[in-house]
Image (spheres, rainbow, N blue to C red):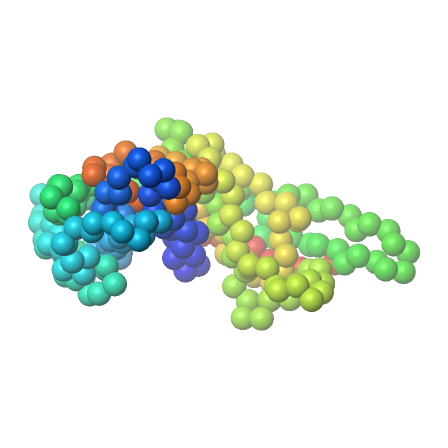
Length: 267
């Protein structure tokens, strides 16, 4: 799966910029960081600027596309290269498992910093079946189709870490299980809520398309799980669930994954 799919979902929770509409609250130009570090990728970071409700506010003189951002990997150091639209990279700074990462930069006369590390790949990720048979509704006798047993997923989690399961249909032209009528086709991706357990189950009701599905298990950090669960964040109540970011909002986190496959077929 393109791991950015889950990133976009979580990014939608943090990129709700703004300030409190209460006239007694002064707008503070505070950067919003969006960074997900995945092993094997080069280091990349995005910095966004808040968009307030007010029209008459004072922005800092900092250029969001020309910040001096220092990145550290364990004892290594680099200055990230700006590439536009608030994006910064270092293609020689390759993310690796168990490494620790820090960033530092100045914005609005404050020192912005954050840290994270890269968790291990999920261990012993298994599934109870590689095929899920979903019966077609019989319109001749109107008998409800039999409900198949759920697909059980399991993995090792002796330390109670956080994991999240994402399922994606990877067919070029997925065949819907039910007729969507005149409605727009729904997404070919669904996901489970973060868990610190060691199992999940996928029921037939969660699948909307036949065909090959990728099942991705992400090993995530607590700040990632907090961001996902903090779905009451809004532009009128901008909070920062990540404890690693100082003087900023957003997410700066590492993650890792493993993948299984499931065929969803007609009876």
